[in-house]
Image (cartoon, rainbow, N blue to C red; front, top):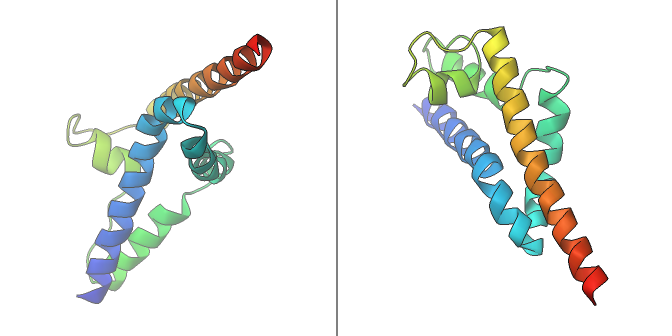
Length: 125
Protein backbone atom coordinates (compact mmCIF):
# COMPACT_ATOMS: atom_id res chain seq x y z
CA UNK A 1 0.00 0.00 0.00
CA UNK A 2 2.72 2.48 0.97
CA UNK A 3 4.86 1.57 -2.04
CA UNK A 4 1.97 2.08 -4.45
CA UNK A 5 1.17 5.47 -2.89
CA UNK A 6 4.82 6.47 -3.19
CA UNK A 7 4.91 5.28 -6.81
CA UNK A 8 1.81 7.35 -7.59
CA UNK A 9 3.34 10.37 -5.82
CA UNK A 10 6.56 10.04 -7.83
CA UNK A 11 4.50 9.74 -11.05
CA UNK A 12 2.48 12.85 -10.13
CA UNK A 13 5.59 14.90 -9.30
CA UNK A 14 7.26 13.67 -12.50
CA UNK A 15 4.21 14.66 -14.55
CA UNK A 16 4.04 18.11 -12.97
CA UNK A 17 7.73 18.60 -13.70
CA UNK A 18 7.23 17.61 -17.36
CA UNK A 19 4.30 20.01 -17.71
CA UNK A 20 6.31 22.78 -16.00
CA UNK A 21 9.14 22.35 -18.52
CA UNK A 22 6.81 22.79 -21.49
CA UNK A 23 4.29 25.30 -20.11
CA UNK A 24 6.81 27.12 -17.95
CA UNK A 25 9.06 28.10 -20.87
CA UNK A 26 6.98 31.08 -22.06
CA UNK A 27 6.10 32.01 -18.48
CA UNK A 28 9.75 31.98 -17.40
CA UNK A 29 10.68 34.08 -20.44
CA UNK A 30 8.58 36.88 -18.97
CA UNK A 31 9.49 36.48 -15.30
CA UNK A 32 13.08 36.65 -14.01
CA UNK A 33 12.01 35.12 -10.70
CA UNK A 34 10.39 32.15 -12.39
CA UNK A 35 13.35 31.87 -14.78
CA UNK A 36 15.62 30.89 -11.88
CA UNK A 37 13.30 28.02 -10.95
CA UNK A 38 12.84 27.06 -14.57
CA UNK A 39 16.58 26.83 -15.23
CA UNK A 40 17.08 24.91 -11.96
CA UNK A 41 14.56 22.34 -13.21
CA UNK A 42 15.73 22.35 -16.82
CA UNK A 43 19.46 21.83 -16.22
CA UNK A 44 19.30 18.33 -14.65
CA UNK A 45 16.57 17.25 -17.08
CA UNK A 46 18.73 18.27 -20.03
CA UNK A 47 21.79 16.60 -18.47
CA UNK A 48 19.87 13.33 -18.24
CA UNK A 49 17.81 13.36 -21.45
CA UNK A 50 20.18 14.79 -24.03
CA UNK A 51 22.78 12.00 -23.65
CA UNK A 52 19.93 9.44 -23.51
CA UNK A 53 20.41 8.35 -19.89
CA UNK A 54 17.50 6.72 -18.06
CA UNK A 55 15.47 9.16 -16.00
CA UNK A 56 15.98 8.49 -12.28
CA UNK A 57 12.35 9.40 -11.53
CA UNK A 58 11.10 6.78 -14.02
CA UNK A 59 13.44 4.16 -12.57
CA UNK A 60 12.36 5.06 -9.04
CA UNK A 61 8.66 4.93 -9.94
CA UNK A 62 9.02 1.56 -11.66
CA UNK A 63 10.97 0.14 -8.69
CA UNK A 64 8.21 1.31 -6.35
CA UNK A 65 5.55 -0.33 -8.55
CA UNK A 66 7.53 -3.58 -8.38
CA UNK A 67 7.83 -3.23 -4.62
CA UNK A 68 4.04 -2.77 -4.48
CA UNK A 69 3.63 -6.07 -6.33
CA UNK A 70 2.58 -4.56 -9.65
CA UNK A 71 4.13 -4.92 -13.05
CA UNK A 72 5.62 -1.55 -14.05
CA UNK A 73 5.01 -0.13 -17.50
CA UNK A 74 7.52 -0.69 -20.25
CA UNK A 75 9.15 2.23 -21.94
CA UNK A 76 9.40 5.81 -20.85
CA UNK A 77 7.32 8.02 -18.60
CA UNK A 78 6.27 10.48 -21.31
CA UNK A 79 5.15 7.68 -23.59
CA UNK A 80 3.20 5.97 -20.79
CA UNK A 81 1.33 8.96 -19.41
CA UNK A 82 1.29 11.59 -22.17
CA UNK A 83 1.37 9.68 -25.48
CA UNK A 84 -0.27 6.27 -25.03
CA UNK A 85 -3.59 7.65 -23.74
CA UNK A 86 -3.95 9.38 -27.13
CA UNK A 87 -1.85 7.12 -29.37
CA UNK A 88 -2.02 3.55 -28.06
CA UNK A 89 1.18 2.15 -29.62
CA UNK A 90 3.26 4.77 -27.79
CA UNK A 91 6.57 6.09 -29.03
CA UNK A 92 9.39 4.14 -30.57
CA UNK A 93 13.01 5.31 -30.27
CA UNK A 94 12.65 7.59 -33.30
CA UNK A 95 9.46 9.15 -31.93
CA UNK A 96 11.12 9.78 -28.58
CA UNK A 97 14.01 11.51 -30.34
CA UNK A 98 11.65 13.69 -32.39
CA UNK A 99 9.73 14.65 -29.24
CA UNK A 100 12.95 15.42 -27.34
CA UNK A 101 14.19 17.62 -30.19
CA UNK A 102 10.84 19.42 -30.41
CA UNK A 103 10.77 20.17 -26.66
CA UNK A 104 14.42 21.24 -26.75
CA UNK A 105 13.77 23.66 -29.63
CA UNK A 106 10.65 24.98 -27.82
CA UNK A 107 12.56 25.60 -24.58
CA UNK A 108 15.63 27.08 -26.25
CA UNK A 109 13.45 29.35 -28.36
CA UNK A 110 11.83 30.83 -25.26
CA UNK A 111 15.16 31.11 -23.45
CA UNK A 112 16.65 32.96 -26.44
CA UNK A 113 13.58 35.20 -26.58
CA UNK A 114 14.04 36.04 -22.88
CA UNK A 115 17.74 36.77 -23.34
CA UNK A 116 17.10 38.98 -26.39
CA UNK A 117 14.34 40.87 -24.56
CA UNK A 118 16.59 41.58 -21.60
CA UNK A 119 19.42 42.72 -23.87
CA UNK A 120 17.03 45.08 -25.71
CA UNK A 121 15.87 46.53 -22.39
CA UNK A 122 19.44 47.11 -21.23
CA UNK A 123 20.39 48.71 -24.54
CA UNK A 124 17.38 51.03 -24.35
CA UNK A 125 18.43 52.37 -20.93
